[in-house]
Amino acid sequence: MLVTLAALNLSWELDGWIILAAVLCAIACAIPGNFLVLRRMSMLGDAITHAVLPGIAVAFFVSQSRSSLPMFLGAAVVGILTAFFVDWIQRLGRVDEGASMGVVFTSLFALGLVMIVQAADHVELDPGCVLYGAIELTPLDMVIVQGRELPRAVLILGLLAIANTVFVGVFFKELLISSFDPSLATTSGISAAWMHYLLMVVVAVTAVACFESVGSVLVVAMFVVPPATAYMLTDRLSWMIGLSLLVAVLSGVLGHISAIAVPSWFGFQSTTTASMMAVCSGVFLFAAALFAPRHGIVIRAGRRYLLSLRILCDDLVALLYRLGEGTNEARIKMEGAQESLLCQRLPLVLAARLLVQRGDVSLSDGHLLLTSQGQQRAQNLIRSHRLWESYLQDQAGMGADRVHVPAERLEHFTDSRLRGELDRETNTATTDPHGRDIPAEVDARDR
Image (cartoon, rainbow, N blue to C red; front, top):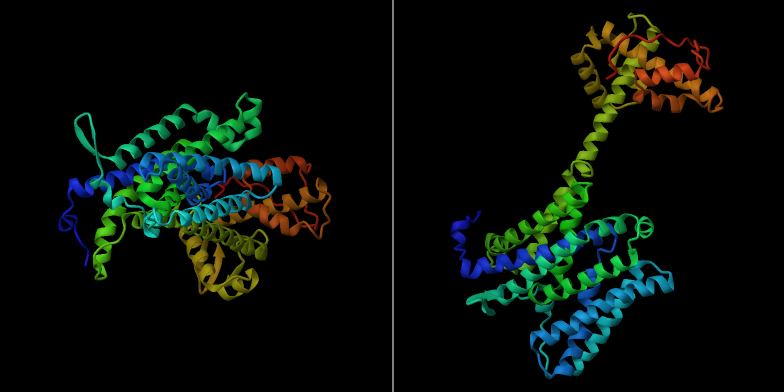
């Protein structure tokens, strides 16, 4: 049974701060994440979150303290070095970027584990905290800002989100050009290398700043999933950034609510907010993968099916025209049409019904017949086919035995203007390479 929001007993003092921290973290990661997705560097955030352990260990050895500032500085330095090492190994070794990431973060992660083991008596390492963070503890760690108490995580993540927004706003043009065409950026006076390194620094600082509060799972998810979702929904970078922020905000809000509500459906109490945020963002990505207007699997499959149905309609009227070759006396049963067109029964029935509905074909005694309107459509279609055959033979030098298949593909996308061009290019040919008459153009709307 679904749990209503009222039944969850959400409170601002607890849940409000958690949701705000989650939203700010998602926004801070999603902003630079758009450019990581465009540059095909999505897993850099994962590499950085794995490689910060040496920095944390060194910070402890130097400061002999577990306070947040030394830990953050140590992790940030190693995070930035990780980004530089990845690029350095890729350029020097001429290897794939994924391979260089694997070498760097596994080496640094292993080194960090060894150093942590050396300090095991003094450092408490909670694997669950490393993976999922401690965002539920956000309201317990408060700082006073201008006389008002704010969670430290909210303050840090809020400043980080603002800084990343300002960074993208100031360098939007430079990031845009260098992401799509580094060579053009260089010739335009924009240093693509410097923009790359500057973006890597931003990503490293963002990953480390969010790591303590939300853990590595959510950092990696927010770097990749909201921008990837937006990437499938639009082809404009400005819209992509806006949509990624919307997905990030919804993931933060719904993630915390789901962490409380969903487990109760199965008899459990709750789960971590960070993990449910990753799940919610994954749901958005899955929905976009299926139903995105241009790139969605379902939408593209629907478009392909409608295109195949339209082509089948063309083939059916062309078949009837060829059987009567210009008269309206040709008729054929559904079985005969299926055998001639080598198609399945159901698509053929749908195509026939569509043609009957449009008035191109009539049905009489189980036979399909062309109407006068269908005759005009079929005549222009056959004209397109035979003009293409003539053009391919005359201009492309193809033999008469090879022009039929390409002409059959092109005929479905040829309108009256293109037929006029083909007619001029073939010197107003009256017969095709096979000796068949090219029918005259009729004044009919191309559909």
